[in-house]
Length: 405
Image 1: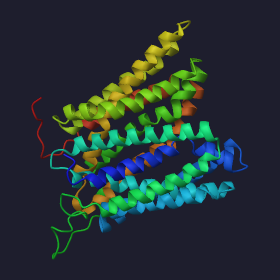
Image 2 (image 1 turned 120 degrees about the vertical axis):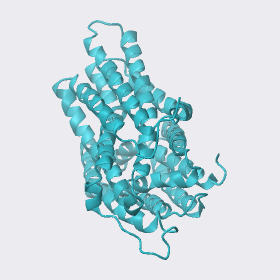
Image 3 (image 1 turned 60 degrees about the vertical axis):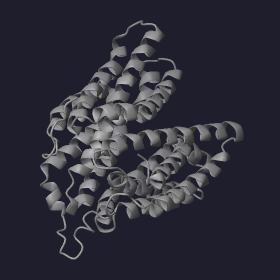
Image 4 (image 1 turned 45 degrees about the horizontal axis):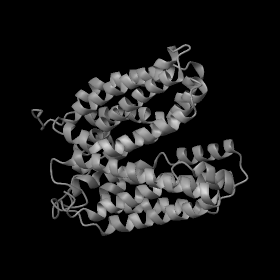
């Protein structure tokens, strides 16, 4: 039921559409707009990304103090400011500064955004809504990327300036939608309304470090994050440079992944929601390990026809997508359900840090392993997925019981 959540849904749609506008073309824009080489642009973006790593900790403190709506709106405005700076960059340090601002906004956003879902839905439908939001964002990013591709093909690289400005505008629009949305459930700041008039017990970073169950969740999510870096980091170079397969294959696999997540997530999440979230996560990791085995399988295909390689890679991508659909909404659900109200922001900061660290480490780790031995990155990812299964099984909130299928 979307009643009362129109602005929430519209904000996600607008935000993801804007993100899609520059999803695949940020590096293209920067090499066109500056005299820097591709390597220099990449290094500058990496520096900005690394400098933004501590942002989730700040986001956690702001979340505990001001609530999710305010932090999400602030995050969108910060990202908008970063893309405004992109319009005037001309050197490596300016790119690093602009990307620091953009990535800080993104880290702030995801530290707080998961807490908006319980405010938008009725109790018991959290995982369905996390799946719905994931599907909506995939559709929006895909639509934005399509608009950018058409604009670049028709109007040339100069159109990227307009797309950068439009992206900043969508972030401002999303911020206004989030700020003016009135959730149907409870107060925006955790515990604020219920604890009005009495002393509120505040959490601490030490309490987070003693929360073994939540740290286990963070570790499981780190394994998930590293797996999610396969499409943007590993897939294209593996297929084209290692397997020497058709150059059309990586793009096709990415389209299949994006479309399948957008279309299948509501149905698959609706079925998996009848079971406890840790069960969905465990099954998702098992499916992921099978997908990585299939991704590595063509390494043994000596002299196999191109269609056979493409078919195996397609099967691997479908399994990979299914694992993503099973695991992502359930991990997000537990990130909120297992966080105590008095330290919710700090716990969300730790959960988001797993995304930041995984995203920063994956390009270095996966490409280094691939250059050393092509099977190694798939072996690492499959091993992490298998090891995450028992960890996932231990994540059940103590007050929930397994419903009957």
